[in-house]
Image 1 (cartoon, helix red, strand yellow):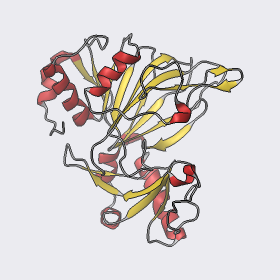
Image 2 (tube, one colour; image 1 turned 30 degrees about the vertical axis):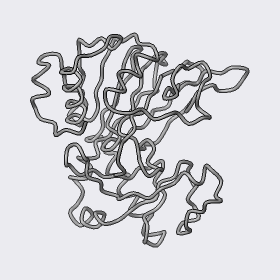
Image 3 (cartoon, helix red, strand yellow; image 1 turned 120 degrees about the vertical axis):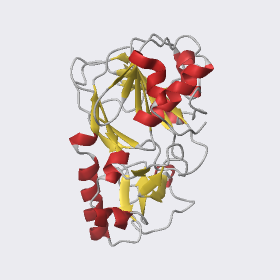
Length: 293
């Protein structure tokens, strides 16, 4: 599945593609994701994702099975964590990001509010390859998704910082503060939420493009291994501020029917705040990766 992207992927669709921002992202027009795609089209959209990091297809009306089929063009899908599964879904990879309630309880994941920049499943040994969202209900204002290009974040680091982080690893945790026992080893007896933490290199090489990307994030990166805590905090804060600069970011304002897939290995994403009294509902699948980064 891995491939080296080239400009040929842009020209293959001609006027059917347009750039979303100078930072990253491309829109592909003229696709009907409710129907199967032919092999040449699949090959082209894979290349576009690798080249542009974020891929948007607008105006779709797809059910769960059709979204699963589109996701599987990019690889094997990961099953949703049990606590986020909604019983009426037809596939274990489906998750709803929604503020819907039943009997006063949220029925989906990540219901309300702003969310800091992060990378999905960075807290496990094998982070996912990509994430895909399909917009169903969108609030009138806010609830936008921000995407940050981590190739560019790495490439624009001051040289002394770039050289410093090359050989370092950072700990990521599913729940903020789950790794607060700083240098303590991970225990097999640790409660499940706290067990969801893993250290990764702070700079990773994308297996499909050969490019290096910065791999830390404000929401889930807890500390740099081997550094005193104060030094770790200062380095991470510098990196967080650097990687979130507007020049690296595309802000997506959702429209119902949007399908967006992004490369989780070189892109961070965040969410802007919105009125919790308005409905926000998106359907998610995650494409698994075959190798640890």
